[in-house]
Image (cartoon, rainbow, N blue to C red; front, side, top):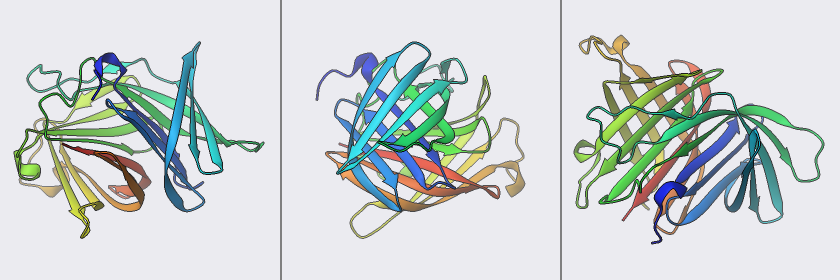
Length: 245
């Protein structure tokens, strides 16, 4: 694997009503997933950054989709519980202007770009990165990092954040659950995100997310999926990146 350094990124966009979403990553090996016309396919991507926006182009077969990601927030360094930076990104919330190649119509939706100052996979046996739309200008982000030989979610170090405009609030506890099919690929996800000082004897104290797979694919050691999600009754799209050594 090549040295990742500050090139490590995960970026994406999506609109649940339009049925279009994209996810691109470079965690040492680049990959992308494009959801359009009811189908999710592995894609290639190119990203060009300059000026006030980044242009992300995803191509899968004969389909090419371009998303212009215009920052609506500054790059926000997410806080960790103990000051450790491993697996903790800096995130920029974006407005995405999405169009298919040759099409005049555009879709406006939410987007984001996450970056790491160091290799998020260093020393890891498993790495998860989830992003869920939670209404206008609001994102939920969760990450999990497990050492080699870790057996399931209970042995992973998890973190979760709420991004609302320019503000990022870390949850005191983030619980991730994943259901897999017979091939070991995720089909359903769940999140419980507990704010600081929440009453954990009451289910109402947590922000809860459930998600069902719309489409996913694997490239190398990385599996990526787009999920239809509900967050306390609000519908949106979610992305799930799963890397296993």
